[in-house]
Image (tube, rainbow, N blue to C red):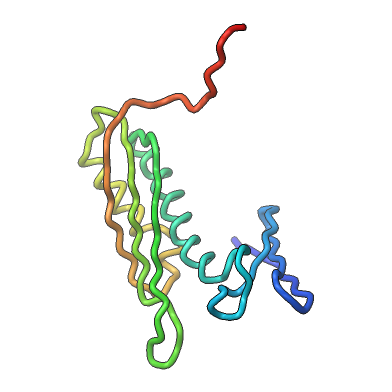
Length: 151
């Protein structure tokens, strides 16, 4: 399995990055590195890739174990530092807030948390320490449909 992106830059930012999944986005270095505000930066994409992959794997494992997830929100913070004269992300902290259905077997939920961290292909490919600190709550599913009332 291969994944391909194509990048185009025409002399100034933003540039354009297209993915095989059909998505095209504007990119720029962060403002701190001479870029412009607004487009996605490679640093944001790197931290975001860890966050997205963890969430996707988490939900897949939860489904396979019969753990009903009502809502998932995750903050990811990557620390960009100079290490041995080279800029890198030595660590990324993932802080998911997860709402589960009432009556959830919390031992199964713990298995989901551990398996998602262990099996995420993106974070497994990074040379960064990945930490996960989960906050969980329980509530009944809610409808996200707009309220439609008769006229």
